[in-house]
Image (cartoon, rainbow, N blue to C red):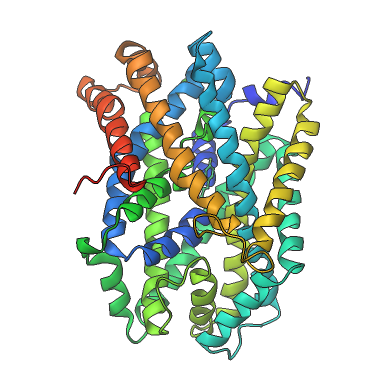
Length: 455
Ligand code: PFF
């Protein structure tokens, strides 16, 4: 077997394998680190509700579209567009995706590196007897220092690279299957401790009791961007995974399951964090450090906290890995298909290029803090451009492609494989991808970027 050619045409060995791998891509730092932090920045419940609306009306249909494109073409995102729309410019959606993948993995690796450092901090009992203020300075001292965050970031990138080189089945399926459920168990334990802290109710109110006057156009755009980011949509990741799904799989069901799992885990993370944020008097809008500052305080206040904290940061790192491999795959697939590079060489090259960008992301937290564009440091800039611009733009094109270019007949044919999809469900799906998703994305874009003011 030519290992350079075959992995992309492997199919998953079990239905659970597909769901585990797609959910492994979706569930990651986006749920546990980014969701709470941006919900805090944009004011809590109102942001959450808008986010949930985008997940259901835009995220889910686009996820199904990506699976569809992948399975139909049995190709990665570039090959897929070339195959389904030969000779057309649709393949440039793939180029958008690769740019997004570069940017996302650059800052993702940095945050995953923080998580590795927190494993060490947990093992060496560094959270013991620290006040919330001390936790905060510990976090900032670390991320602002020039060397160690970079070393951890590079370590994480090497781990990601190694798994991608090993290949899809061994690499993804095996770990995701049992470690993700374990992470959920720990988060539930954290939720229980967090909601029973004194003053926890304020946090629950912040998370679930909406004040829509707090919503800003930028907040709505971020909710849209995060729906894409969290579900791994808009850059072809799930097209590639869809190409591994066999024809007996019910795509609709898989998409619904992955979406529910991803959203549930983000909600649980929110319930674990916000009550504690209020109980410990931490500022909910304190930014990217929110989880790293808050959770160690919770661990300190619970029996077995020492062990839970180690396990939590280990599993957070694993969750980050099952996502980062899916991001790296997008770039590797591009390098292989378009530049004709060998798989392993493509993987190493992509890892090096992305890691170098990541080094600057890390430095922009400390040494290069003063260099900002539109008021954002390099780290935040890459996050903002990729999640809020490139992914929704990719999603817009994907929905137009499926809704208008391919059309109902082809979709129905494909969705009927492995399931008995009833007609009205296809009608709803078509309406969402043809009309609702593109219109909503366009409006949120123009509004968020200040081109139009709709209210
Ligand atoms: N969905 C991942 C998370 O929530 O951490 C991040 C991600 C993975 C984004 C893959 C985009 C992607 F294509």
